Length: 333
Image 1: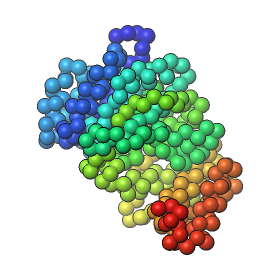
Image 2: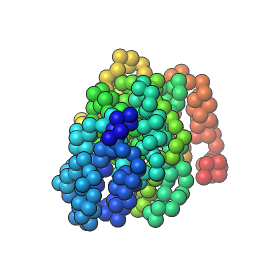
Image 3: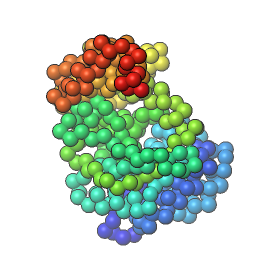
Image 4: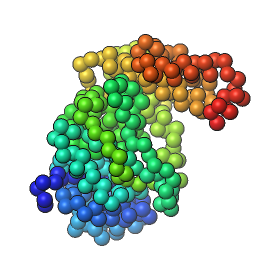
């Protein structure tokens, strides 16, 4: 291995995605990057996945095929095996752009950088380009908004492995937003000072009918609510807890397995929760759920928002109160 380049550990959780898996594996192994530690954790696939993995096993640092409790557990198995300086996972229906890992390694040349956030391409089932992603949302000088909105493009967001000492592993009880919870834990522990954004397009993220992103979008929304409900509960913020709880389907909300890192300044958490409510209000408005948007807005303390975000708050208030429903659909189709 070339000692001047950091070892990058890549984990692929795999389960019955044999039609895409070989492209994923090839995109890792053909990076022309010398210091790759590639780990595949299969959940006991019954399609051709195992045969594909065996075809490449001589190039893998580790692989296993056995039943598990889902994607989060599979990734955690890989994280426990990883020894690289930099870690990330790529799902078995996505694939890297050529030169992606070299671009990541270059961005990590500064030893103070803990996280590198690139960009990605959204592709369809056939692998055809749909659009570019903008990458993980970073709001410089606004950590509370970055936490409260918590939008991470995980495939193109790479971490130093040593941050796991504080962030811990993924929350195994989350099956849709485990990356979001990991990102929140990172931000609470380290803030934004050691995050670098790069313009390089690193990953192709595939949308198809069987992907969770396409087939179960409401589960992502609900689990995000569960995450922030757990955050309010852990910090004993009863008012924020009740406000978030009222926006969720309480019958299907279990926060018992969601653990969030403790921070020295709980006021940061309070502000982040109000930014979460602002995000929910905007989403409700977008979906023409004006009653729920008004409920979310009524629970926001505007003095906790930065001046640049008050404009969205006041715009939503006006439109949800005074603009007729039929006109709202024209304003935001």
